[in-house]
Image 1: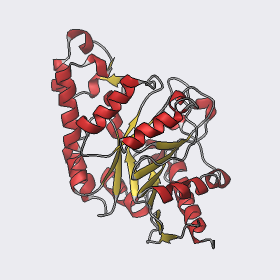
Image 2 (image 1 turned 90 degrees about the vertical axis):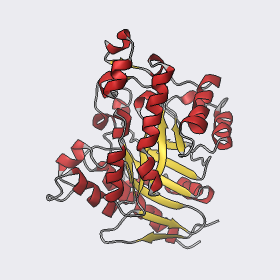
Image 3 (image 1 turned 45 degrees about the horizontal axis):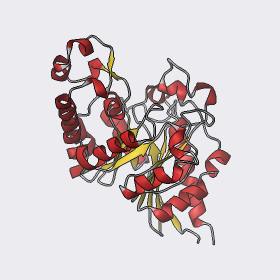
Length: 326
């Protein structure tokens, strides 16, 4: 079955692809505030000097962005409201879940002051804490604040998914699936929770079918990835849709830096895809578009203007493929 795709052109062009079969494909990047992008001078006009001006310019070029700052600290309702005001009505924000909720080490200083003060004495002395270090009452409070901060985006119809990117030590098993189910059904029940794994056991020959069935049964989007292979944290580049929203995130293929300690995100994801490498994903993305209602294609190779360049390339490739005769 061939797909009839139409690339909707704006001035400046926005990377939106319309798929006549089922899905609306949104192409964008995983940050509009990356320091190396701003310093490169290769994307934002010289007069765009404030975060508000940069977001407005970004939203003229792309229909979706992933917010990564929410991984490092809780979002606020005020900021979410400002994001709503500064973007078009059809713009979409995907948000990364706060590090604490994905079982990553979380800087104590990133916790709200009253929560820091409520930690036990041992935890207050640490640089980082984990989810297990908080009492159930503090966990409940943190979840409530996180969920409330998303309300302005959700009410405006601009919230896409909340991305849970779990670490390599988040292993397949009953305790892990129970946690994901609790996030979906109890903690963030009104939102769309998407799941990205960083441990290849979830998608081993033994566990792959079980993992995808679990996500599908609970209408949890599986996050498809392009990333360096051959590591414990490497997930194979599967194109699978397990919910009405589907996601593909491009992390680059910088093998040398993928698991190196003590480097910045920009160093880890420093990679510029060639057009041939992007073409490898055109057919899988078209397949996903047949299965999903909305497809998020996000470039996370956020070093200088690599992500925006590749996002524009991908949008053009998808548009050209959709216009090809059957």
